[in-house]
Length: 341
Image (cartoon, rainbow, N blue to C red):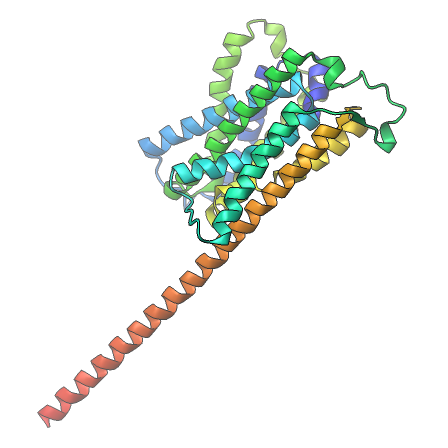
C-alpha cells in the first residue's frame, strides 16, 4: 500500500530498503541497549555469520524481490500470493527436521493436506484471472488506474509473480534461520537491531551498484520519508522482534500461518484507496489458500497440545520417580538405624 504511493513519487526500491533498515536500526537500538544490557550474551563468530545471513535474506533479498513483484503486479495480488509462505516454511521445516510427520495421525495429514491446498490455491491465482469483481465502493472508478491488465502486460505480470515467489522463499528461509539463531542468541531486541543494521549495510552496497545517480538518494518530508520510517519501524523492527517471541514459543510455521489477515486487509484497502481491480480468480484462489492454511494451523495446534500433554506426563513421571527414590532412601536409613540399636 505505502509502496505504491512511494513509487508514484519516483523513489527507487533499492534506496527505500536502505532507508527502511536504517530507520529500524536507529529506533530499535536504544531499547536493545537499555533492556538487554545485563542479559546480552557475547557475539560469537557463528552467531555473527547467522546475523549476516539474516540481514541478506530478509532486508536485502526478500524486500527487494517483493517490491519488484508488487511493481509488476499489484499490492493485493502480492499479499494474496504470499499466503504460500506457511506452506514453504512447513516444507523447509520438514527438510531440516524441525517438523515431524506421522502419516497415521490426523494432525500430520491435516498439515500435509493444508500445504497441498495452499500451493493449489496459489497456482489457481497465477493461472486463472476470470472476470473483474466490482466492489460497491469502486463501481464508478476508472479501472486503468491500478489494473493488472491495463498497467502491466502479461510478461511483466509473470515476472512479478516469479519475484514474489522468490521473496516468499527468502522470507521462509529467514524464519527458519531466525529460529536457529534465537537458540544461541536469545536477546530479541539486540538480534533485531543487528539484523536491521547489517541489512542496511548490505542493501546499501546493492543500492550503490544499482542506483549510481545521486538524485535517487534524495528524500524530503513527504510520502517517501513516511514510507521509509513507518515500514522500517513497524514492518521490520517491531515485526522481527514480535515474530521472534512467537517463534520461541510455537515455532516458525505457526508464525507464518496468519498471513491471510494481511491479504484480506490489503485487498480491501487496495480496491478502496488504490482502485485496484479484484478478479474472480484471485478471490477463488485466495479462498482456497485460506482453507489450506487453517488446515495447517489445526494440525500445528494439535502438535502443540500433544507436546503439552507429553511434558505433563514426563513431569509427573519424574515426580513419581523422585518420590519413590526418597521413600526407598528413608527405608534404608530406618533399617540401618534399627541395626545399630
